[in-house]
Image (cartoon, rainbow over all chains, first blue to last red; front, side, top):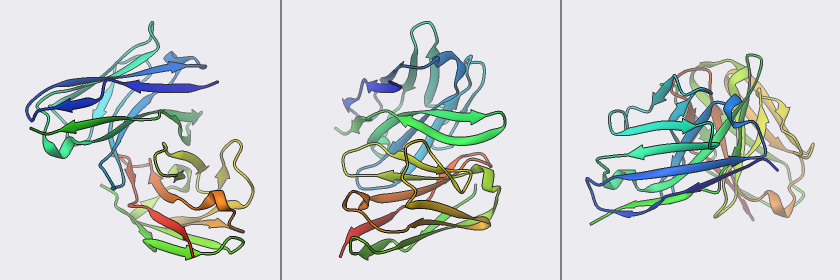
Length: 122
Length: 108
């Protein structure tokens, strides 16, 4: 079964740091680009970051650029999101998701992990 | 950044009725890069449609997508009880990838 499982969320004070992990199983992790998407309580989905299959290329939303770092360990089938200088507005459920592409054809984000809640509060 | 505007915000319908959800983009989006997701409370989003009109694996044929350019539509031909949820459109053709704000389909 193709599965993504996030961990590492929790309560952190403003200005603090947290590292999220996303463990992948059931597919060849090293062949896929991966994304982080977040969802503030009661709000919609917002793209955060992406990384290519070998980790050599990354991209970030302007709101997290310079504060968050996406990385991956293909030997451990794990995706990471290092979050520094956290702000109250970073409070959200963070999802990891696999990008499906066939050739140059975008086929969506699938699957998504169950999400991990990050709460930034004093 | 391409802004996706979904309408209506909430759709109140009865089981068995037809649901038509709209997603309008602020700039033209290649239909190849338009997807739809379903999200139920407390759950992760689930991919329904990609390429504007192709159903993802395991998605029932009551779900269909259409559209091009700046106007896209998700149609649920006959609502089943499990279809009451929030639906999001997404574009991936222009960086950054963006999502619409969602349409909630609720039981009338």
